Length: 440
Image (tube, rainbow, N blue to C red; front, side):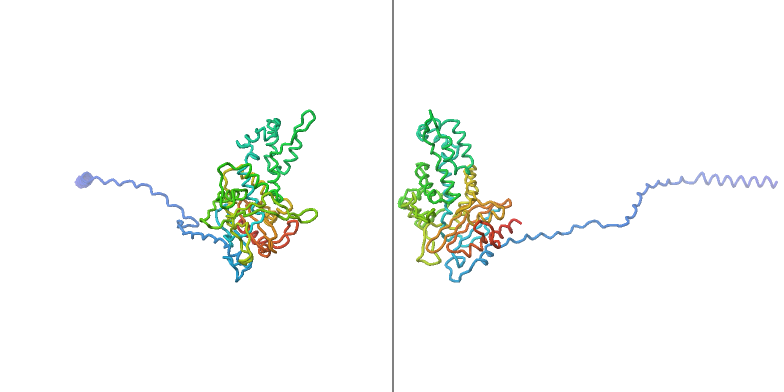
């Protein structure tokens, strides 16, 4: 009985337990969590994100005031008549052609005598006007070369063989000094008889001598040659009341046109007023020589230089330093490469003698190139010293012009001192210091 009762009790308990599980709600599924990304290991030297730091704008180094430095070094004069108050008669203009900027201007618009420095422009005047005598690529050359009458009626002098030899020889302007020897060596000979020498190109020897040795007679002959043989019917001329047209007025008109100089009506003009007798050194001593242009004048080129600030002491044949700068700037930028190349080839010549001026001495000592023409003469118990041209130095180009009268101390400070052979004989001058400063 007791056993039966226990069985019933166990059955009831199991039934209740079964019913409890059967009636319970289904458990809510638990979503599987996504795996978290691994936490990065700490850097042994953690760095913050870079911040943008403001970089200060670099202040450009101010350019040196070369004009001020030159004026401080040149002699000042309390009673000077010059705009920049220099005690001596000195004009300076220096320009950087590479960067197109003025570097030095001292009395740059004051007229000074130019002596032989005008021969650089005369060279360019000849080259631009007389292509028939040097430029074998031009139509003028061909026409003149084939002119049998000009060739002394000798057909050999118009032949292809002769032309080839001639053009090869003349292609280098440095050969021009020997054009007479060339013609003599190739003189036409027939049946043992020598014909006339071909003299058509002898003017080139004078052009060479005018630049390389600063020959005054050759310069006068060059001016006359251009006027008589090379100018077209329509060419720049000064007004008739200037005394022309003649070899001087035509040159001055060309110079003004080439450089872009313009004058107000009635204003005195600068340029070559006269080119008369000169004193030449001969074996028996100095002697006066009459030039082929003696007696000719350009009365409109009457702008005079005042010597030593004395109004009673005046001289003609003047340019300003800026005038010659404008000439060399125009030559440097000339589109005509053949003309410019021929001019540069001759202006680069540096032969011992009177054409070796301070600019040649300076550039030679620096290893630079000077395409220039100097001038030196004695006048009224004083000395004219001029130099002007293009200087090529360390990949840059400059125009340097100095004009002076009786200003030996100023010229020495500008260029330094050199011995009779053109070698440095002292401290460098202002111009050398400028060039070295500008090319550092």
